[in-house]
Image 1 (cartoon, helix red, strand yellow):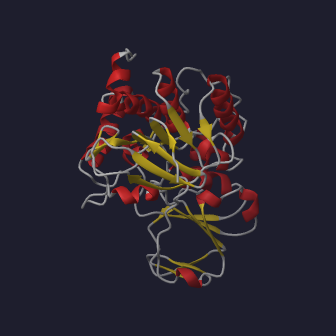
Image 2 (tube, rainbow, N blue to C red; image 1 turned 90 degrees about the horizontal axis):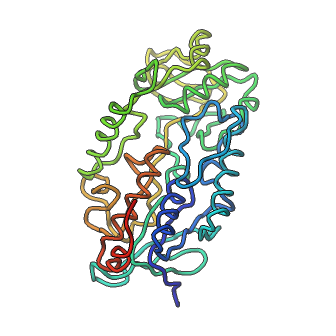
Image 3 (cartoon, rainbow, N blue to C red; image 1 turned 60 degrees about the horizontal axis):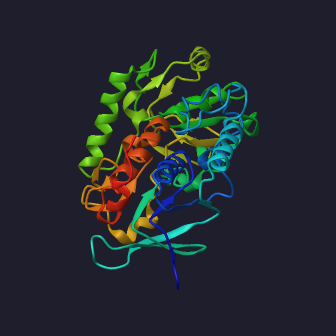
Length: 360
């Protein structure tokens, strides 16, 4: 099969992918963004409608074009899909969709050879690859004894729509992150809930300052440098008290219970041996990086993760991961896109282009 030739393929059209595309285009590098979604917006296209712009974590501007004024009451899915779409159009970014990437392989044994990207719409051949697929498509489901016997409904936050669907039903929420506490605050307004998590989150009254935030990101970066699976930045920073969360605490929704020991047909068996009856188990247990298409490159090490040097896969300098590990925040994704492009321009096949560009 004849492959489409380009210098850099970017996989993923969310914030990290668009940031990378912006910097590639600005530096005159031939590229193609392959996005599996039907339209702009990345994972934001799938966020629940009740997640408003006033309650999401800070969303960084995409590089080059500031986001428009924000209505705090607008659903984040609508606002950010529109913002990303207008951004692509205004800059004329080269985005192909929907394109599902099946596999990435080396075309030959040369360390400076090309990479073959196999997709649902043919094949691409590139000198380098920027992977920006995020985590939304790989929700993590823990396995517990008796899970298959539960007579109620189980769902992951990736499938959550609104609290209204649970009215009159007891919901057991599992998890200790932003999604867990945010959905507890929302669902507990209309029905009864219980909250289970392995440990109490670290709560903060205010956000980290710039220096402390840098130190936290450095801890995550150290893990991926060693080839260990990344922790989320939030798991290190803790959770910030908001008015909605304080109100949820006052009504008892944030009374945390240790993890249950088993799931039974009518509910979950608490750590103290009693039964908590439940109609719904909502797993707010996080996501894993979507990297299965990179498996033919054998990037994972004995630690279970991928050894990184900045955005570059340490043993494979042609492959960069953005929106991964320390760059999984919106601000980090923007910076990672720029850093990945700067590093790619130092590869042998890009020497001529690098000489003609002054990196800003």
